[in-house]
Length: 285
Image (cartoon, rainbow, N blue to C red; front, side):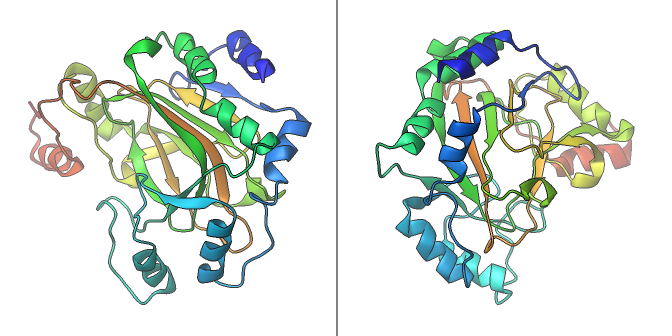
């Protein structure tokens, strides 16, 4: 997988809508198909949500704690079927999903590629690209699937996160047409003061905000593409998955580098705080 490291080293950072690394055609065709054509990633259409969950378990996928998702699979199935109206997500979202992480069950090429995207070599190369001291971070990484309803409203990521990485490896040949891709956004002018507040108050953690406070600049629809960025006051991104997960599933290699838990955060203003101060014409201090 040295060719991926070479692409990272040679690539130039993109500045809009915020500073990030974008790489298309990341994997060779052989490696991309080793992931997307694997029977553990691409399986036949499921008959029901319950059948899908059985298949996922059969092929080594396990429910994973993840923002915008719950771990109570039965509660999710009730919500998705319409028998439960509870929203266990944040108030800025309409729904929630379930995330599954693949636990390697073989030493084949899929397992080798998954191990690479969780490796120190891969994440250190990205850390160096963004001037991050890799030795001070901890990593979390894996191959994920996200079911219908998965939603994270616009947010720049919290202070403890030093690096965010997403690689699209969707098994469907029509995945680029589906409504489950990551949005990259900017604040609308009237809400840009929030970005300035986060910039000027490094002790204040960042929060999720309503969708209608932002405009989407583009979506990462391309399969076999990677986006990586170091979270800051303007790194707004979001997902709202609305699709038929019985036919195929949103699938990504996902990775974070996190700073130590002693990162200084003394306050956590919410989107409601920003809303109330904007309505009252007051500055949030």
